[in-house]
Length: 167
Picture 1 (cartoon, rainbow, N blue to C red):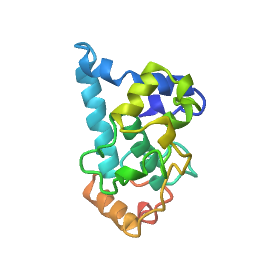
Picture 2: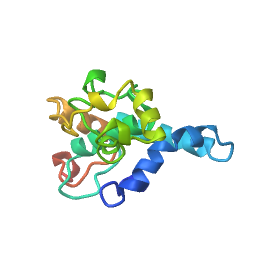
Picture 3: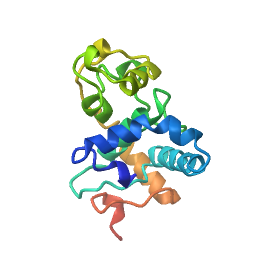
């Protein structure tokens, strides 16, 4: 996931990656690696197992960033097993992603062919997009879920989680 974590510093790299998915999925040399990446990303979303990069970033915010990445790369269907999928109608309207911010032109007439294809694959147009939030409020059962996943060994606790400290 770290290769996509430099979004704000290198937005062109992120946009290029989002526009390269079809090529990676169809290229005989990269399709197996890319399928493994897709499976790993889905597992991180399902298990909250990708640790936040910064000490001040919450696991929930990190999980939401991964959902944005999934949408930007693979489209509106949630990752398999996503326990908190974003409602489909929220994307592009109440929910804004890095690709929407950096990869979509302000005006439709300035759009590129890859950009138009990306929007069409998600059932969106330039007119649909409304800047919105990149995350939602944390669900009430989220902390209990993290604790259970940690006990089951699906993820490692981050230092700020109360159950990560030895008794």
